[in-house]
Amino acid sequence: MVNQQLVARGIRDARVLEAMRRIPRHLFIPAELQDQAYEDHPVTIGCHQTISQPYMVALMTELLALQPHDKVLEIGTGSGYQTAVLAALARYVVTLERYAPLAERAQAVLTGLGIKNVEIHVGDGTLGYPEKAPYDAILVTAAAPRVPDALLEQLAVGGRLLCPVGARDYQKLLKVTRDQEGFHYSESIACVFVPLVGRQGWEEDPPNIE
Image (tube, rainbow, N blue to C red; front, side):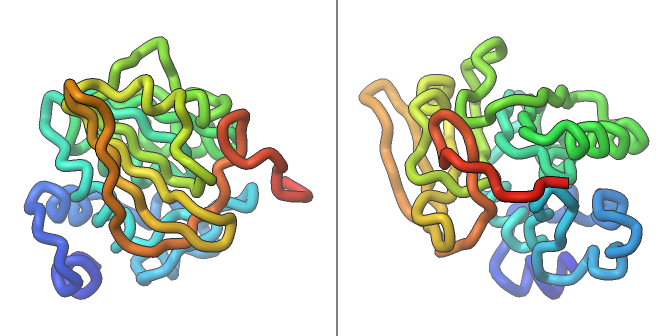
């Protein structure tokens, strides 16, 4: 996976590549779908959510340029796989998930792997987690109509934020950096993520959540 899907497509950060070599992706995927764990596409994980394709996980992590002392906020725990990658590269990760069953499953897998520098909360990710702000890096793993103001407020000076922004069915990956003068925006690749539902995101829930 790492050589064929990541290195071959331009991922160069050695720490990101090593983290994704070490973390067993299949453990974060429902048992009946684990044969797809290392393929280059998203995989459903329940609650109408997905685990992102490996390349997207690697690209977003590389764009964050994490340092060992960083404190990270992740919006959308999902399976917990992206969380584990972040935790391998940063000092501490706070992650928010809307759906309690996903949060519980992710916590079980992370605990089983001995990953201790993560705390998971169930709640509205569009509001962030101000109790532990500011954050050196913020990663949003769901698509928003715009970057939530609450997340911008919780980004530290010198920090980096990544968020898919656009319509519900098509987005651009937006990178925001913050310095003493304010916020600076740049676009990366086109992408398609599940919607970020919440007070500062999309209003409606997907139907028939199980």
